Amino acid sequence: MPIFPKISLRPEVENYLKENFMNEEVLAVSSKQDAQGKFEALLNHLSHPPSFTSVRVNTHLASVQHVKSLLVDELKKQLNGLIVPVLQHPDLQDVLLIPVIGPRKNIKRQQYEAIVGAQCGNAVLRGAHVYVPGIMSASKFMKAGDVISVYSDIKGKCKKGAKEFDGTKVFIGNGISELSRKEIFSGLPEMKGIGIRMTEPIYLSPSFDNVLPSYLFLQNLPSAVVTHVLNPQPGEKILDLCAAPGGKTTHIATLMHDQGEVIALDKISNKIEKIKQNASLFGLNSIKAYCFDGTKALKLDMIENTEGAPPFLPESFDRILLDAPCSGMGQRPNMACTWTLKEITSYQPLQRKLFSVAVQLLKPGGVLVYSTCTITLAENEEQVAWALKMFPCLQLQPQEPQIGGEGMVGAGLSLEQLKQLQRFDPSVVPLPDTDIDSLRDARIEDMIWLANKDCIGFFIAKFQKCKSTLEKDPPK
Image 1 (spheres, rainbow, N blue to C red):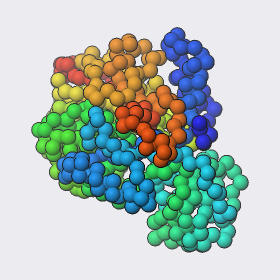
Image 2: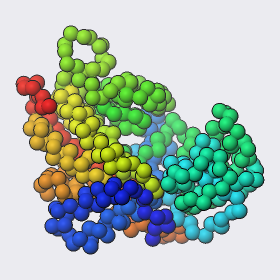
Image 3: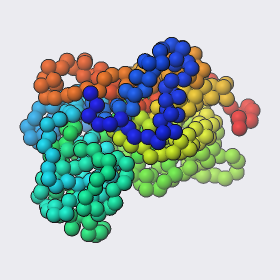
Image 4: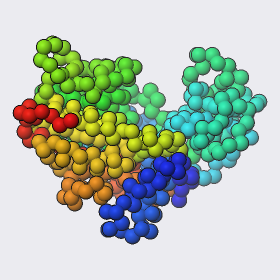
């Protein structure tokens, strides 16, 4: 049963998503009532966290078993001796899964309270403590050491520094204040650390803040699937076209045993610095990260010599990952999205620009993987249909491992084509209640099955380029 209200959306955005999930092709194979129920289930799932926290092991520096044993010890400390299983994913050998315990329904609400921003609230539901910048309001007499109840301001209406807030707020747990109200709102730039240490969160999930930083990368399960689908090989030249924050970039280099060349592009400079830091932390030398706009990554003339830096000559890469900028409507938990319909629908043209560049940069015989963390048809199946029409040189490929469900009808793709896609749709399972007792009795294969289903919303398509695009002008 949902413990939180379904994700709050602007009416025009909710109607747009409803049209996606109740399109003519859907209604031709299922009743309107069933389609409506599935859509409502999806909206409920989006406001709740996934059932498992997934982390990827840096197998370049350590074995999975060694890191797993270190993580088990760390979790015992964090959870005060509570034994929570750590599972190795059978199809993604470098991924470890930790069940999330919750929702915990008997937590007593305290006299003092703090209101945090929606993004901060989402992070708390996935195991984070509350950092000072995320605190919007705190009770008038709150002191360091007080036990306080924490609420998420899901509509973004609370004014910074308020002493009380009567707007829409959702209880996410209790914690101990590390600072007084006066210190939190002092405006001093050094006030950036933990403001409230969560002791009784509604969902009990481990914190990975600075936990085994050279060995572990916190990564949603489908995001780890993507790189395995790309299947990078030692010695290849691979492009991660929209690379930030770099989780998939470091994963590519790791699967290649750090042999070859991984080029990472992003147009925001501090994100590129983060990718470089992660590469260094993971001991990876094959990654070269550049602050560059991916839509301009194709070199249009042969005169300028950029010596390995972007832009690149056509057909330069063996494999390309396009984890495209998207509306992010599959991210969980997300209790409220304030975006307009114009913003939600603005990504399709940008994705097509990037895709066109990727096709031209890919060698004949090369592999292109396209992925998003959203649920809309326009950014997923419609993009596949467009790509197959615009680029006859591309063939859709089956994916390995196949962990998500098949693609959604509505974009005119054949049933065979839909089976070659992966769409992760959390609404295919009921929202689970997980407690320590249920974990003791659970079978490992059932837990793995749940982890595969109850994750974020995500989409993956894999293409192979069958012939060169140099023989004729590229499509506009």
